[in-house]
Image (cartoon, rainbow, N blue to C red):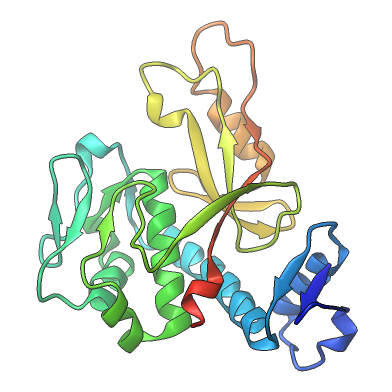
Length: 242
């Protein structure tokens, strides 16, 4: 269900939204039991834009040549980032945040990190595409890329639901992961719809392929298969529209 200014709206009421990808998201929103509520049409349009840009950023990161590794072995382009002892990357002082975050796409072979950092990078790039370079450089002067740690100007939250939308961040859990490979205890992914998911280290794949991959990373004599969780991670889109 979609509500704008407390009024239920149907996809047919939103004639100004014409791009196929955005129309598909609206159709899904309208058909779900979850309520997607907005104060104005502009807020809905911004979320749609951000979701499309999230998928675009995921596709670009997948093609960039970045490598998968653990925090221990993570590395980055030292021109723009300081590699910290915990494996995180901190934006250098007096460096353009937009230039630095896009360098990950431009010079992917100079970077290696694990899947939660990859999701953070996708969301920062999607933010840049959605709000523009000028505002991005003002808001994100000291980006810190380390797992699920986000700048206060890009808050994210979790909900438990099966009402997945393209552009959502979803999670595959691997309860019987191999203790010698704890980085495969889960895989964080960008959902594209139509059973397509981008996960750093596995690429853009259907759920069955990701589950089969994770099942090969389990302990001896495992009892439980990997599975797609019903947890959704989303940016707080409204914080970027004000």
